[in-house]
Image 1 (cartoon, rainbow, N blue to C red):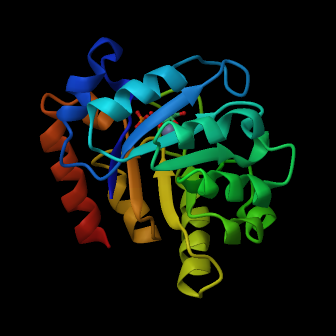
Image 2: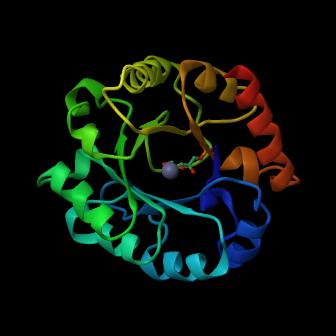
Length: 217
Ligand code: DX5
Ligand code: ZN
């Protein structure tokens, strides 16, 4: 699956930018609060408008503090998948996943590059999506951290052995020169911002990335 990140899109034309990647699988929406990460993007009102403007399933990546307070609102706003950061959770992560599912969304958990998968492998049994960050969250256009391939392989093996039942999603630095590596390591879903919205034709870029991932798998 390919999930274009609108972080690299034109925020004044989000409806058109979503339409330009209509063949994608998910539309990745980076929510940043200038607290959990040092950058500020968009929030619930924009997600509500985007949901009304596109048929693409919205994949909301919440890079925010206090997800217990805010995350369920994104599920209620119609997000298909709501991903919170493990490092931001202060309460019971299993209960938070249940609240997201009760509100009608898939529950996602994201790990920053420095956060070990081992610390979260039991909790992840209650989640639908594991978002492995392959850059430090906060900004688009960074370089893929090759050291994260081991974490992707570990996640793939936890799924293949039946310990987890999650979509393994990767985010950060995914482009034509890196997507095959992440696919070989076992990722199922690929977020790409600058590689898609920086291209002359974002729709064609989605197709090119999908073909590269499929042949590597
Ligand atoms: C970074 C965001 C990413 C970002 C990826 O914190 O979570 O989704 O848009 O951008 P690229 O694909 O340019 O690395
Ligand atoms: Zn993201």
